[in-house]
Image (tube, rainbow, N blue to C red; front, side, top):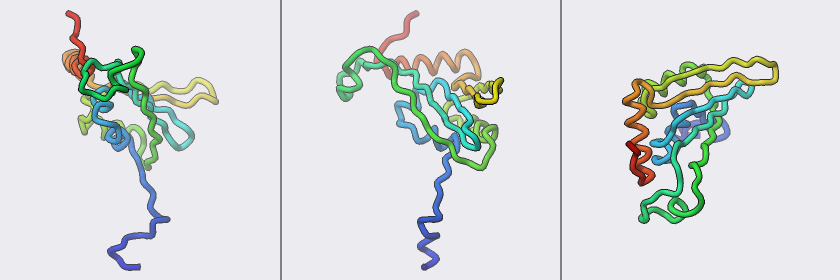
Length: 148
C-alpha cells in the first residue's frame, strides 16, 4: 500500500455529528427546519428534523410533486448521529455555525427506565424578530403571503 492511497477502505468510518447531519439536508429543507428532536438510542442518537414547509408550493416553475396534491407538511428528515463528542458539544457547534440561526435547547430527562432522554432544539430563536423573519422566509418559499 502506498502512503498517498490512505488507509484501507475497511478501516474508514464516517462520523456524522449534528452539524454534518444538518448540512446533509437539501437547501430547501435546511431553510425550513423549525425543530430538531434528538433521542438517545443507547450510545447513539437519532435526530429528527421537523421542516415547517406546507405543500403544495404555488410556484408553477417547480417540479409537479412540489406543486400538486393534497395540502401536507414537508416530511420530517431523520439522521442517525455517530460521534465521539457529547451531544451538548454537538449542539453548541451547530449553534456557533449559525446554519440554523440561534438555537434554543430543552433537555427532557427520562422518567421511566424504558424511555430515552430527549433533546428539543428550536431554530432561529435569539429574538422574536429573528423567529418572525425566519417564518416570513418560509412562507415566501411556499409562495404564500403572510397574513397581517
